[in-house]
Image 1 (tube, rainbow, N blue to C red):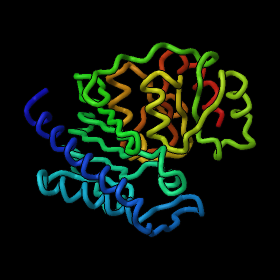
Image 2 (cartoon, one colour; image 1 turned 90 degrees about the horizontal axis):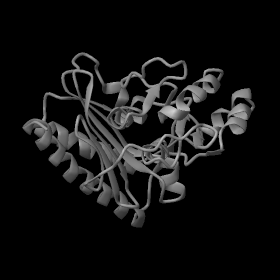
Image 3 (cartoon, rainbow, N blue to C red; image 1 turned 90 degrees about the vertical axis):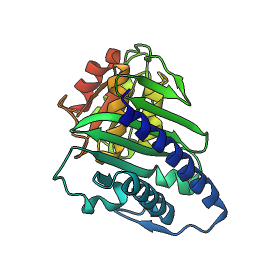
Length: 259
């Protein structure tokens, strides 16, 4: 790991702990909750505060870097990809509001479109997963092995079920996979693929902040990441996508491509 990436990683670890403490402490306060695209698509004052915190820290240490954040996506100008951060301050906001669990912080850092650092912080369980290019994947500083190969027939598969109702592909997946699960937080669902608890996760609608960090994890662990048609996922565009171990990937694509 070069010195620049090492120093950047050290900064992010500190920022994540500060942000996680902010989130946990917010449960003693009154949240301000708003809706976005529909009644269950929520954003809170904490989403905005946490994102502002990360932006402030990045601008303090790296003032020339570009930032794409979920709560300020319209401000992102895709003019220079030398240094790009992608941030989801609270992935799974509905879970944050309704359960106070099963949500996470997602952050990634790219240089010239190459993923260098990716982070998924399971805030309530205090589990920090991170991926470093060419160094591997870690959970709380302990290196994780590549997950075992799990076929679709033998594996649990997570999908964003609300968007699949009434579709033949949902019925086929329910038949061909061992079973279906869904946490309602793409980061948490992805962790279960990264650690080998799920064979795959598929989302029909995702923003770049839902995908960018996981692409780095997948590369380090030999997992497959693509759009439903098998094409590359653009970390700045989003859309439909899957993360899967290799044993389940081809069978999964034959189903999700029909979505």
